[in-house]
Length: 295
Ligand SMILES: NC(=O)c1ccc[n+]([C@@H]2O[C@H](COP(=O)([O-])OP(=O)(O)OC[C@H]3O[C@@H](n4cnc5c(N)ncnc54)[C@H](OP(=O)(O)O)[C@@H]3O)[C@@H](O)[C@H]2O)c1
Image (cartoon, rainbow, N blue to C red; front, side):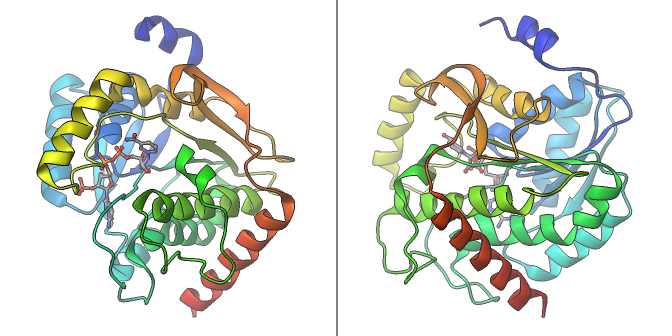
């Protein structure tokens, strides 16, 4: 696939548009930011490491000297950060919010808010931020892009253990958090006429996500992923595509690679991985958790 040609037919210039993105320092985030600078968007990097973001800004401005990029500290495990970041974003004329952060296979911990760290980073805080910012998003007719994963498909909700605390399988724990993110956000935007949402799956690609595996295993996994799957530059085009399509509000859809959700060009597709009962359960749980945290 010729990326330049693809960009010309699937994206439009973003001059004057403000895009806030979480996880900009990651394997996919880095490429998403490069595409966004190429499209002249103004960027707000929402990252946990000021140092890494500064490096990212340096690299981007070396490539795009006119790029307008700022930084707001956001560690999704630090609720103070989350609240301060939200307050700052309320004053921004935001056009896009890209929820791109994700953790997989990290050591499990209980956060200061009392939740599982993977559940909090991948679902709870992105949901909290989106819902709290809703008036701002509505006012600006902004679009939220939420980065999900095919892994959500293999983690049917366990109503007795919503955070999968009794599960030991990393892929399922991660998948459960992405399942909550996917369907809670879908439902949150179901009757929303001003702000909008598009869900996206980047496919499988080599980033820093496997860094927490033991060294030898990580080395083998990395080689396997590198050989078999698209590189992050191509995979991040799915997120680009999601910015420029309108997905259905009646039934879930997402943008993902056209072939088996792994290879091929980004494509908007129906997502039939959960029934209405499960989606409603996820949403009502998300709303209860939101109220608990808010208070
Ligand atoms: N790679 C894949 O094959 C794949 C497949 C399906 C879905 N995805 C999804 O794609 C998205 C991007 O992931 P990636 O592949 O680019 O992974 P990555 O290289 O590991 O990047 C993860 C990003 O999340 C940030 N992050 C981690 N913990 C955080 C926290 N507590 N607070 C704030 N930010 C935090 C990281 O920041 P630091 O740089 O500071 O660590 C980094 O910017 C994720 O949502 C992931 O689930 C990836």
